[in-house]
Picture 1 (cartoon, one colour):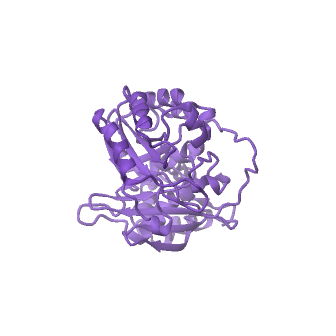
Picture 2 (tube, rainbow, N blue to C red):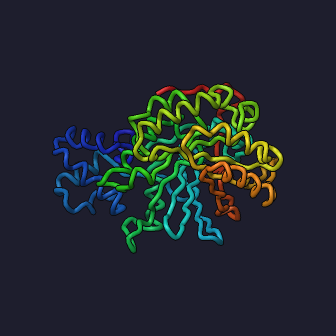
Picture 3 (tube, rainbow, N blue to C red):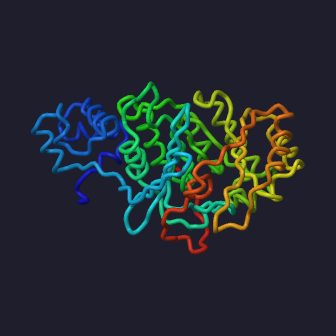
Length: 365
């Protein structure tokens, strides 16, 4: 792509309005661009038939519509689909589509690899290269929609839910993520409900505090431990932002959010004989007793980059029962797509690691 061409997929709805005005058009042209791209899947200006011919010709000289290309597709026996998408320079990110009876969820990536390096996560073991651009993030949704459909069918959207739970820590790429959220929620683009878009974070407290009241979508916190000592090992970013600071930031965020209905989702990966004892469950219950939440228990999905193991069903059930008896809403997540390495914690993509054991620098917004 020429550096002189503006990729319209890199622009938020408000930026598309500014772009339209900058080329001598009315702001409403932005709505037309959004509809053509995200509701009809059109990336050819000649096919935008409600635009004047001279405008279509002009757009071809100054703009483009480009998303990452799908280079491979794997289908699980349970219906889950995993795509590897080319983001250039020999690097791939992974995107996962999870069809269910009541929803169709797309799990998207926000970074090439992940700098947080949770000890049980295959993505973190792959290293980190860079943040994804807006077009590289929303482009995953666009490409998935070209496969499963853009329009509604039987009153359910082909993609009804978006979770930013793929490769990367969304809050470390927050500027792009905010623009992506605006596109997902726009009535002229994907028109998703704010409750059907979820940002999952390991807990970057200052950034979460900064976006509170500015971004209103569902929030999931990857906690994975009931105390700082264990979380320092499992989620190393905890050494910079401990549990107390993270939970304070979560409370602040959900207090200013309508999408969360006053509570947060706590994600907790269960690791055999590491964080899955009944004592751990009791400690977790005490930690979260004053936080309105639901708890997703995620039995560990094994992969070649980790020696951790999945707990037995009996250990999972005992952990669940402690929390349930304490009055928490608890769900044990059904593993999906593990036969194609598409389950939680298994995404790897193809990453040219730039970390090289350097200190992770947290970028402030």
